[in-house]
Length: 542
Image (cartoon, rainbow, N blue to C red; front, side, top):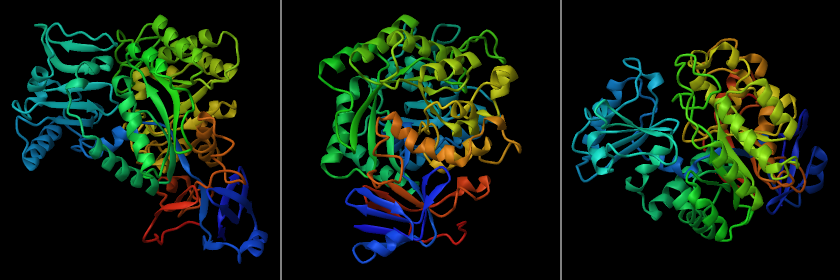
């Protein structure tokens, strides 16, 4: 047994303990000093020295394998101009001594941050990097890909290239590909992109698990297994589990862009929830639309700064209904990406049709739930649909949201406070590698409604802020609810898994602006310490 003493241990809203007893992988008791007196001679004692303890952070939607590979790529998320993108890429090619036999693939550009010319990079721009080395670069939201001329040729794109999975291969006035692909059109080239070996993926996953543990993550709902790679990716995680290499508990979201893969998936005998406490099969993941930054989020009215553009519906309503119904018939939970109000509306229509008045026992949910109207929020509340939200998206979206959709639509968007007050099961996530999976930055964003630089001073729609208790719960017990694990995960109570984080700040009393700078002192998964900070920062706030 292990006995943690002298801490501020978060149990539930406004309730804290000082002492916690672990037995094997579970919490045996939580209380005050009486536990110390009873068990101090029977257990290994760990003195928390006043530190705050919260349940392990549980990211309810991200792409962990993609994040692991992404962290090994050319870094372009912070480029602030087209010129810098070109120069940094040229330098990378030189440093890595890349040749025409190599393929430069990376992710993370965001034209909204370009200070010289705010345009989507196309073949003409990337040809300035190289015309002999194929180059493919994905936008930060992963909904637009840019290619140079060599990549267009190598990836076999022509005048006749069309996407069957939604999206578009953009063409110039002569009908030739411009090098810009949107949404499902990206799938046309995925089979031709460079692929890491299984062993390299294992190395990258282990490295990234250590990073995630150092930031307080103990569980995550990962969306890596997709279409033709489902078995390959699931086998990868299964092998890591067999090797006892997992220090994160994974809930696998199964991603379908091409519905041709859905029925074969069920035919292979997969069942919802199969697996272990470290690696479990989760929901079917689908798409309804694109993103706000790329102007591909499906909107009921045109974009304010592009009135003829209504975004992209990645599939017809009939097709979406069919896919949801198929998953529900096989007793699978479903999570669907919906950012624009039209995208969200289509999801709710598909769910309503599949449930046909029955309760939402499969816990069907909307991922992002970003641009909404009051009618959509009321439908979510009324039917008990789950929402998976990313407050950290405010960091990128605050500068563009008003110009994109105007004040009226913005007033009912990113409505975390409204959803929380209505009792909606709302879990927090990062959607990494879209942004960092650092949970403290996400909690800060939810509580302050500000960008990481502290702007705007009063916060964006501050009435939609949530308090720290709600934010922590959204990252813990609500994420556990989304994976049907709320009886064993997400609280520090007897009978729950001993997954918790010791942090250097009392985030419940510190100024909200300090939350984003929280440092993890120790991370424990199943009673085992998987991360410990070597040098404790003196700037603590107990």
